[in-house]
Length: 82
Image 1 (tube, rainbow, N blue to C red):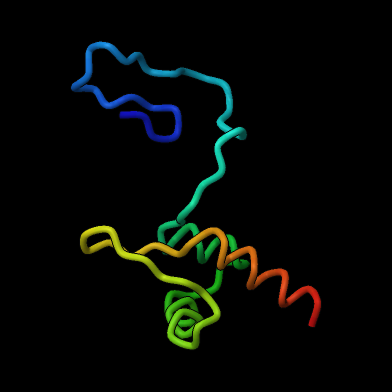
Image 2 (image 1 turned 135 degrees about the vertical axis):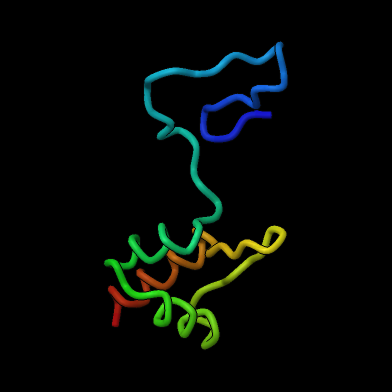
């Protein structure tokens, strides 16, 4: 299983990709700390307010919460046109 250029260590048929950049892969979701950074280092409370007010889309994988890249981009575009 590959994620961001790294191989799952349990699979002997897949090798690790070392070096280079992964700019060809677009991220679909961001964990809270990265989403907060993408929005100019806003705080967690503000991020959750944006989610609760419908400005950002929050998704869960297990117990972890993530923000969709699409909603981050749409929110920033709305700010730029306002």
